[in-house]
Each structure stands twice: as structure tokens, then as C-alpha cells.
Image (cartoon, rainbow, N blue to C red; front, side):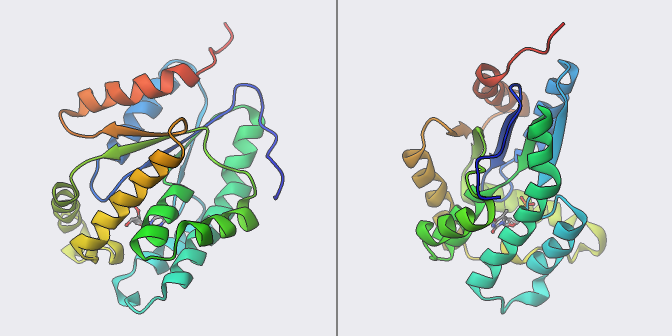
Amino acid sequence: MSDQPKTAPRALFISFEGTEGCGKSTQMRILTDRLRADGFTVVENQEPGGTAIGMQVRHVLLDPENAEMAPMAELLLMFASRTQAAAQIVVPALERGDIVISDRFTDSTLAYQGEGRGLGFETVLKEHKLALGELFPDVTICVDIDVEEGLARAHRRNQGTLAGLSEERLDRQSLAFHNRVREGYRKIAALEPRRFRMVDGSGSIDAVAERVWAEIAPHLRPVPA
Ligand code: TMP
């Protein structure tokens, strides 16, 4: 998979990024519904996860029992899930000319493992090259909110889940870790300002959705009548 994937003319690869509890899943849902209502075929992906194999990897990654996981093992498992999703979901959809919306992609690994865990961008990009070649999103929306506010939201959400015990391993990291993750995202934005779009995640859901739409609309090629 080391070559540039062949993408059909109307294909578009969008990813969503952000720190814990930033609201990206809600925004992804709104964007997906809007695009489908406009006649686009949208294929969704989630990282880690996305495929049946990826979901098994996600379970290992997020299980609080796995507190001793080495940072490099974490990085490689993120790429294991992503490589499977690329082969099974992302590349086939782009070849068909569909729109792919991915809940996280390699920018998460840059921010969380590269910056948060301190493995560095270079290590992450080397692994990306090996596993995924040139496959990067055309446009990335990073929903930016205050880290403490997002963590409080994520904790409330996790407490509402089955048995109330599913606070995930990565949610449990320190505030300093999550602040480094946000810093990682800011670094990517500085390196790739055209692709990687920081969107203010404060205010109402509708207000944020309009900001997201303003970033995505210029990339769309109309569906033929
Ligand atoms: P989610 O809560 O947005 O589904 O993401 C799952 C967790 O995995 C979240 O804490 C971010 C983390 N993560 C990484 O640390 N590195 C990655 O490459 C990805 C995709 C997710």
C-alpha cells in the first residue's frame, strides 16, 4: 500500500480530530447527515476500530486493565487498526468515488503518542509511511475546546455507560498529558495549515456545525443531476 491510492474524481477523505469530549462525534453525525441529504455517498470509519479486527484492537487499547502498555506498543496497535481500516474501508471507498469520514486518523497518533507520550512526530510519520504510504485525509477538522471542559464532559459520558465502570484507559491520563495532546494538534495545524483546520468547538452545537460546514463546503464536487 505504499503508493498514492487511486482516488476517483469526486472522492473526498475527511477526518475529525480533537481532545477528549470535544464534541467531534456529534459534529461528524451532523455533517454525515447533511452530506447524505445532499446526495453524497458517505462511508464512515472510526479509529481505533472501524473494522471487526479494528474493534478487537480497540478493546485491547482502551481496556483500563492494560495500564502497563508500552507507548510504542500503543502506537503500533493504533496503526494495526488503521492499516486494516485503510485496506477494508477507506481505500475501496475512495476508489469508488465516495466521501470517507473518519473519526480520528494518523493526526491522533501524532498528537497522543507523538506529543502526549513523547515518541515524537518523526517516529509516528515513519510508521505511517510503512503502513499507509501517502494515505492522508484531504481535509481534517480539529474541534478545539478547553481540555478541562472536555475531560469533564467525557467523564460524565463514561459514567452514563453500562455498569458505570467503563472510564477508558486514555481518559485516565493526567491533565498535563491532555494539554500536550492539544499542543500536538496545534503543531500539526502550524505545519499543515491548508489540510488541518482548527475549528472553535465552543458555543452551541449548531454554531460549531456551521463552522465545520464552512470548512468542508469548498471541497465538495456537486453530485451530477
Ligand atoms: P475516541 O474516544 O475518540 O473514540 O478515541 C479513543 C481514544 O484513543 C482517545 O482517548 C484517543 C485515543 N487515540 C490515540 O491515543 N491514538 C490514536 O491514534 C487514536 C486513533 C486514538
